[in-house]
Length: 114
Image 1 (cartoon, rainbow, N blue to C red):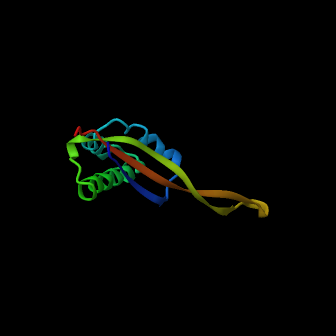
Image 2: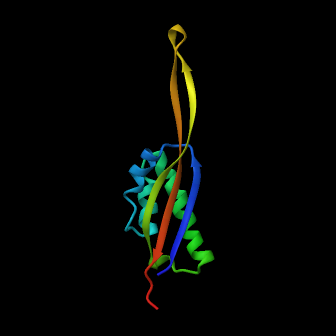
Image 3: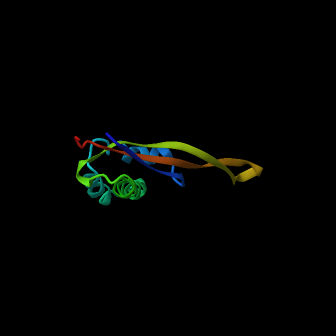
């Protein structure tokens, strides 16, 4: 069984928001996942849709695997760096703003028998 990965780093979205969408994907075929992600309203769905297409292209062109034998083994979002900014408030105070980033990974596995 061959495993193919695709990864995108420094996504300007928190890992929690992406992980909500990513936990639906394992066990699906890439075609099912793409049709599901296409109609989801979350921003994480757009990111994962591009990433599944990239993993599928990697499997086809780099490893010469058949699209029909592939399934999504795992999809997850790890925490990236957090940019720290400050919001000025009354009486000279400042409130923190955390701009979170993510590293998202999708892994496909081939189940073809030789």
